[in-house]
Image 1 (cartoon, one colour):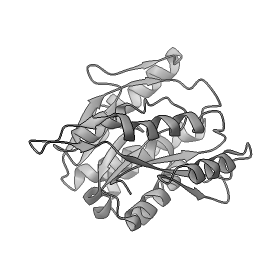
Image 2 (image 1 turned 90 degrees about the vertical axis):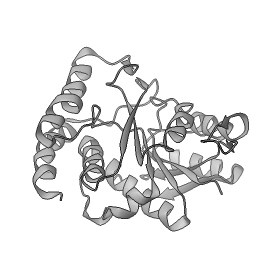
Image 3 (image 1 turned 45 degrees about the vertical axis):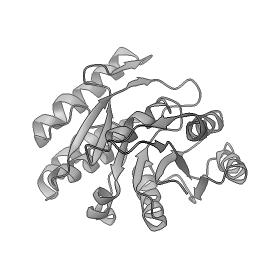
Length: 249
């Protein structure tokens, strides 16, 4: 078992899940990471797929991948429950298994699997590293202008003004937590989904005094499947920021 686990929620991702898992598994054999002055360590990542009973057969494909790769694991949920609760179940599973580093990553290849190595390297100097689209060196490819403006406004301005949290990409979904961060957060108290889930996790880590770092990434819009963003997700994030501000201590 590796010490780093990538949690990937899925719903109708049959055209993406094999490719993303193959890319992550390849990192284990071809990349070597320098660490402080201690020589080095092999870059190894396990994967946990949390599937929400995808009607397109993603869960069955995930099971097949798990049978072929000992580092790939699958959690099956009975119905579509949202990305926030999927991550919570994945984190609880991973904490019980003894992992040290916990990654969030989309299944649709909008996050470059090679950037997992960069995130893991950054963990020598922080407790939470966020793959940021909105700092120097980061960016977004192939989004319509309205979605780019909405995301940038929500992540870089709206959330920062309300919460005072010093994070430029508060809605980012690509990141790595140190084990101590997740152990300090009461995961049963978190009920937000989508963008607001990401904001809440960042805010709780910041309020507890953990060191947060942002690393630039380039986010590329999915080529296959449909986006899970909806008006409900957007409006929840707008109002949930205020709730997070006044209820999270």
